[in-house]
Length: 484
Image (tube, rainbow, N blue to C red):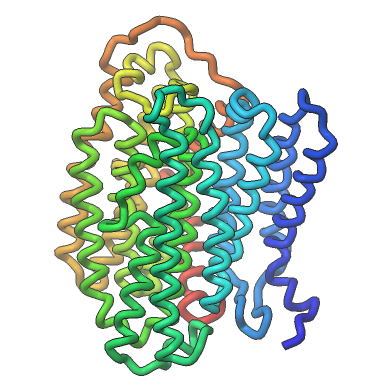
């Protein structure tokens, strides 16, 4: 196979992102120390530019003999990753400038490398580049999680190194499990391309390989029982990094999981169905019940994220075009809702690794608009009308109902009611508790802008979800029809 220029066209956005990363590295070499903040603005401009270009550049079609396939499906996942990256960069400008003044170039370079892996992953149709893309995404994340390694002075209980180490070890273990499983799949099918693997005859060894692959990918998205790294990593990593970590890697993980389950394993899903159901039920139970007693808001959001993964898995479990499309819509709504909560925490406790619920006491009196924004984000995560999270859960339940899984709808709705207790506990602190101090919160413009964008997303998609639903449904249809 001889690569041609035509092979590069479907990857043009990803190549632009990669070239931009090297541009940030080059500029960093020549900028004086007092002006490193400009690297954040350069990164933001790059991400916004690539995101805008995604509406004008044709990136559809196969590349490298079908190893990569561009189309509406891959494009929508790219936009989700780019939005997460742009919002994280905007919210991180002041944090990075204040906490890591001499390491700003490395921070944004790692973020861009991570995003490059995320944008390539949804279009990959071969297990070898799939693993490479995952590692390009995962290794920089481990470094970013430990980026505040010298700031935590709590002796041996330094949270940032622990967060980075746990994320790295889990990532390494999950990669090893995935690789071993895929090696068995390759041995039984004799193919590395996903559509060719689908023609393999089911055998005990192939079933083991499929289960190991599913387990390795479940580590990546934080589904039970492979969730143990999430609470400590969320608590210890810098808040802007946790915001990004809570959304973007999950999206990429679901993109890979969709390709593996619905393309490579579509003809041999019988051994996986019961395992997937157990993971859904366990994720909803563990995530919601373990979030209830948490006093640290970041740990609570970690367990909340595990429960949200359970809802997303319902859409994937249906295996239908409608269910997969609603998974995409769910992730879009979850993006703005979850990022928004973490950005508010960055305002309230910019120097803290953990954020106690009591630190949000009286938030609405200290910064009224910020308290209202936090309430909207929490209501969206809980699935209350008419924030975007309500429609996300509603359409996921509709997908399960259409697939004949009525019991799963009832169980998911019950768990959504349980989640109200811990989300509204945070809202209660912000609205009904007296503030510990009457000092007005200082909100820096860049961080405030990121919160406002998230708030507009939550309210806008909640009031008018139709365009996003249509794009998600069209992308899922193209994916299942093999059009990328």
